[in-house]
Image (cartoon, rainbow, N blue to C red):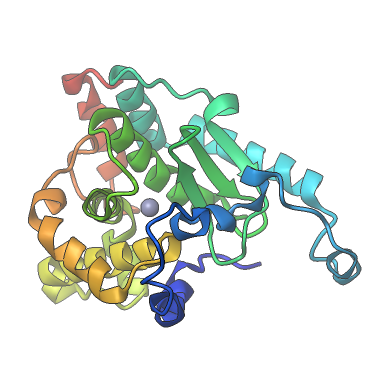
Length: 257
Ligand SMILES: [Zn+2]
């Protein structure tokens, strides 16, 4: 099982930097499209993959992934809140149309494809319910931003902003950030901001061929504005707390649920 691998991409950023001065023509790999081979119909099982047992389970994996997504929609208040917020914004989510389970490059766990307005869950690397739930909420924030704020994912500042918002509202929650060593209970506020910056930086570097410096500067430019924009969840989530339920129960104030 591969789990979250986004962080590994930050180590690869050096090699990406070397390619930076290429022509301005659109190169799909610069925007992460080669990380999702099924998007371009490129994924094929290989003999070595089948023999090693890494491949050949795609149908079972897909079915299990779809069931897990369905469970998250049934059980999770925060997923329901996000779905309600998307609906209220005029972008209702249809499970079959807007969420796809696919085989991805093992360096990513999920993604959002603005061209098709579709969330991708990487069925080969994201298997547990907790991980799928985290990716769903993260990508639904991108979907919400694309719907409401007309995010241009090719604009680095826009990308930085939506990644800051996704990290702020989900990943850098108290417990998970503490487990990653990003926050300590006595210095929550600053450590939380550091966690958001680090997570957003890793997310940008995972999907875009930009230098560490460019990504860092984009985050700094938009940080205070985007860190304080907590629509539509309204608060920084702390898992194992009542925050999910509380955000959901306040959702009616904004017409989300
Ligand atoms: Zn993201």
